[in-house]
Amino acid sequence: MIDNQDLTRYRRQMMLPGWGPEGQERLKQARVVIAGVGGLGSPVGLYLAAAGIGHIRLLDGDKVELSNLHRQIVHSMCDIDRWKVESARDRLQALNPEIEVEALGSMITADNVFDLVGDYAIVDAMDNLQARQLLNRVAVKRGLPYFHGAVYGMEGRITTIIPGETPCVSCLYTDVVSGDLPVVGTTPAVIGCLQATEVLKYFLGLGDLLTGRQLIYDGLALRFHEVKVKRDPKCLECASKYSFSGGPV
Ligand SMILES: [Zn+2]
Image (cartoon, rainbow, N blue to C red):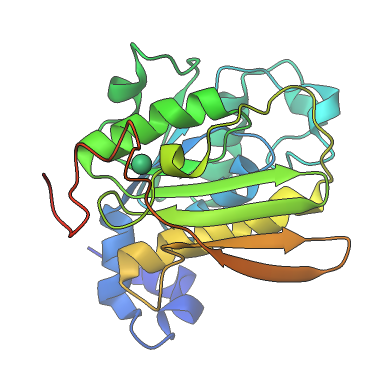
């Protein structure tokens, strides 16, 4: 239940029509896994913790390096060589001790991904398609919402996936792009804040989610544009699981 301290902490956001103590209680019950505690995971984690998402699970198998700090703002100089999940957990708990934050320092594999995700809503803050496809498999099999974000240089993209209603990651992407790609710190900040906004709207039932649409951010031109995205009838992950008229096959 929402207590007096919560009423003070969350007062300004609860003033939004459709939010209120009931909405805040829904956030308190919400369970979200943030896969990747880097450039995207930093703002997602900070804003979801600040907003009062009650159960946050952090997944990342890497340690903090100096070359991360220009964009991974949840970590600081004193965190170098610490596990990212532990550094981020300490920062999120310092920001909001009223929530529960779990730190799971495992690399995502086909063998462990179902246990790591459980039945949590998935924020995709990853930097490679292989891990995204594993997370997507869990989302599709278990019908979990999946908040996709990706960045490259000063460009980013975001879409919200609801299995059975929208394309899944495997409908959208087939190319594998990974490695040491350029990225400017403000790009994951923009995209991560939008992902966090979608997570809050999802649990609150507010507004229109970015479903069936992909929003593309071009930081150099400072423009956003949107493209419609469709399910792939031949998708190996979702086509056999969900019919194209809605509902499970
Ligand atoms: Zn699909």
